[in-house]
Length: 279
Image 1 (tube, rainbow, N blue to C red):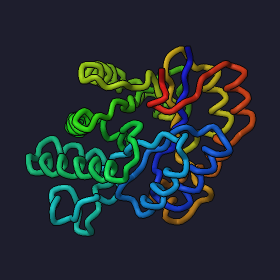
Image 2 (image 1 turned 30 degrees about the vertical axis):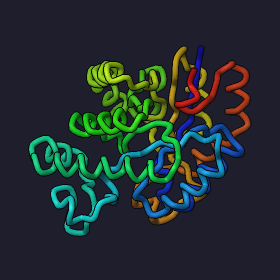
Image 3 (image 1 turned 90 degrees about the vertical axis):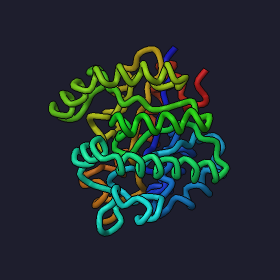
């Protein structure tokens, strides 16, 4: 049987993102959202989530390109002089791999984010990482440890097959290059008792999952669990543009609330749910 999960990342980043998540769930097909627990509008997102019991809310672990949860003086090996996490993802990955201090502090920060999420009283539907940084072996190991320790059973596998890939050729080739590693991730998840999606739609078209792309991907969905992920917002703001230049956040919200997308789901007989709603 075909199961689809529609997830909005960056829940809690700004009020505009939070409003889009609520509207896409109430008036559209959105079934899940990934919460940045240390983001500026996180508390507003938590309050909204409590009023949306049908929305599966998970933890969006942030270890790069954002602000940490812990005070900078507790994790000096992870932050710059302004207290921000690194924006250069490749350099950050190398630093974590070779620095024992960074690895210790990385675990401390990730554990704190899990604890803060659980302290909200929300049931954690799933876990993933901002910019898919759980592709990094150090981050992956810590995230898996924390998920298992806290009874969280579902985790995102950032694998996009060619049949679902959109975007430019460079993005497609990059996804293909990761295939051996994502296969190993899938095996590690299984051994740890973690359940993941079979595939992810939107990886090569991040920030540009428009109605046309969603409809085309739905036609290509195979049996199993396919997660579609989005970055919607009610409108663009300077803060959101700085966070992700060029993202078509309003276009992605339009796709999530599109009657054509809802009809296509029904016509194809695809079950939409959140992670914990999987049979």
